[in-house]
Length: 521
Image 1 (tube, rainbow, N blue to C red):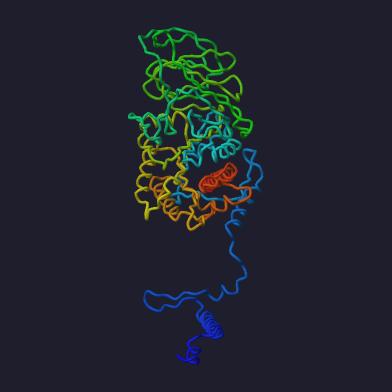
Image 2 (tube, rainbow, N blue to C red):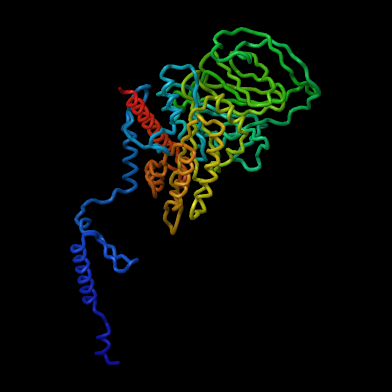
């Protein structure tokens, strides 16, 4: 090959540049001539390019960080909601309903209206979810805002053996080491009879002494604790005689267990004080119950083969309480520290749960407990434990989650249920954190399950910013989520609690407008 011929085979840089210039001019001409920005070459082949109007736009897209700061700024600008009738809701995050003509939270909103008449009752909101709720996160802020507006005191239901209870902001809970938990969400801890509480768990203590017989005991008890009295008559008290059958133990020694609760200084103001204890229990034999308050003597919890509620009013507002149990075969379903009226908001974290297992709870017992505790709203917040190991569709999860909602509805048809979809989660791929691609599919499956059971739905994924939002929550300074790119930290949980409260109140206000308009002549 000659040197002259070799030179002709090499393409000069200026030739490449000229070709690119001509190509771009042709593409620019196409953009000007074809305003739609699309050419169909064949039936299934389209040539798509940037429409000409986009070329003249001088605006840059809003980043996830800017979107997050906008959300936070709107929340921070709100005036503190300290008055019952304060109207400070500026940021609307809608709750969705299966029927546009009917509010799925109707029963709960009717209860809120009743509270304005200063009715002396405690109505409950149960907030049940996965590990996103551990440490009372999200729930504690929702509790304070709801109690500020509608009245109420205390941290609500506090059960022993709660995961990560040591960093719960509202109350510090300790218990003796002989308590055991049976729960719908704990492996190898199932109860064949479905003997669970409204939070999906119940508690027993073990290693009690052998019973060798029974005896009938007549003793004096404060009339506040007499079974025949209700809470509205508890202002009149003295001592009355009561009779119960008590077990006789070998060596006459009781097996003991204890639970101690102390509200924390860092807690929100409303949760710091409580005025009553409420217990739901079941026992084959009598159990002696006592607690620390002004040297008051204890009393016997009578045997019952079904969940039974005992209300114990306190002589003054309390910040801490120690409770002692003596006797065999007692099962504790729930223990609450509440005010005497208003709203109670309970936190139930189910670590590792996907929101399944509710159908295994004894339906009659679940129904009785929901009604005895005056539960008016159930918030179910799950999904993050379904996210790892993505699937192509989640019809199976829709069916399974729908079965849970159906079981709860059958137990208490008048109960309002709000389903909250999964939050954003990130995984590391090729060295970069990005959202799991299946989160919208799981969210949609939960939404369909909610709607087919007449429940409301709130989209947490979109409300926190949608795809890749978690990355911004983690990287923000100060951060709002943990570096596992899954869980909110306490500060981030506060913002989510504010969003959820705003969503409920705005939906409630829309319901009130509907009532007002329907009553107008």
